[in-house]
Length: 352
Image 1: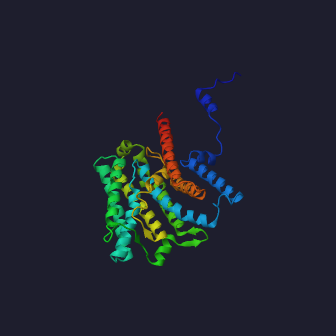
Image 2: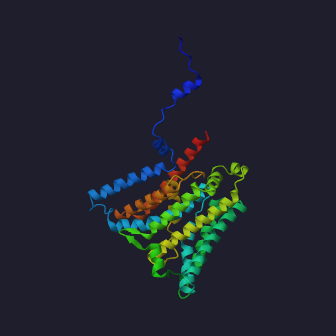
């Protein structure tokens, strides 16, 4: 019997590769797979180097790990808020101002005005919400690009911080001490066991909440839809403007809480310790390294967290190796340029 002539469908099926391990296939398509591989590869190299030559690199020591356990959550929690906002298609480069102003308001109302701590915390929360709503209003209602809008907010917050931190005796900005009850400080920055500090628990809490919002809640679907294709999202009934308002507010709240964690750790607020240190650059770099698309519509919470951890580890390594501080800022700039190039390439490829 003459064999049947293969159809076009048969030929297409023969050209398709055989299905492999579904777990491997799923991992390859995971949005944050690149940062997962890069982070653990870097961690393996650094830990191995530290164990083989501890005199050259004192990375894997309990003291250094404790420092990272306190610093990484500060960057990562702020990165979660910035990342969610970027997935929705917007930017916020005023996070450093929010990072500084919110704990400053809490400290002033508590230490200077004598407010009860819960009311001081509410005041800080309201300030964060107001900043997010202001950024949202300028961007959504006035139609100003969020990069420009939050650039203006950044300078505005710097001016407010300098104003509220003026010392009447010297007429110059001055730091303010913040000594809340010991139980409150321990809850935010206390040592739990070994090098593990309370900041890690807060990072887990915010990461879980962020994951549930993005991946298990309708709001997450709306965020991805808004950032992926605004007009298509509006056509199917997604409240695009409301989504962006909420994303701006979440970004401000996470930035303010990160600042509070930092202040609880050092018990002092310096008016310029974040507003001139490039904290916003670091957070945005962490987010783009973590796989969040600069065009919106793509990103994962795990990638944001690992991106922040990777940058803090690199910063820590440069300190341990006595490298100049400017080297890290140059590294951040190079990372952002590389991320822009890669995002542009991926965006063009996906549109084909």
